[in-house]
Length: 187
Image (cartoon, rainbow, N blue to C red; front, side):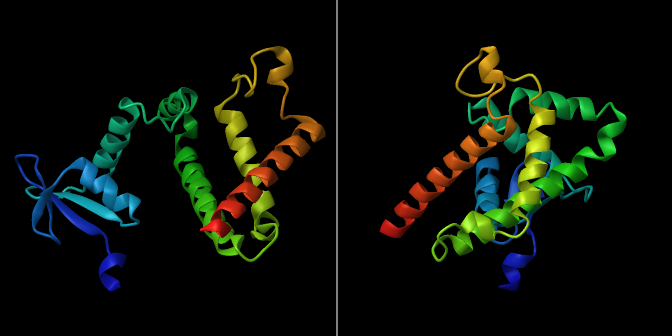
């Protein structure tokens, strides 16, 4: 158990090959992405200089997935990230993103724990309302100017705003959650 708590050490040789120190074999970027998807922390170190290259390789993995059409990050988010490197907001953005992902991860974990035993698990997730407000603010700032889903006209751009829009979104989320719950109970 202690073995999985410390990061998997990957050494980069001068030939740029990546070496898994646990299994004593060479790995690819896709292998490293697989370790991360499986919940493993990874640390990539340059063998000669001792420099930590983890951030560089994680960005490379993301770039490769984005270039293969496996887009997760909308263009506006990428653009705003680039802008944050040249603005005074640069010190706030990384902390905000880290906190948002941590809250999302915690909420998903708690929701999955409660999914089987509660009629409406979303209502029982601690901090759900705060998470929802933070995510709405984040999405508004990152996707300013994008038309709402379902159309491109002025009426579509206003969809999802106001009480009626929020009620419709909540009803849609509840419906999707009920469908997910039904599928899980069949398993």
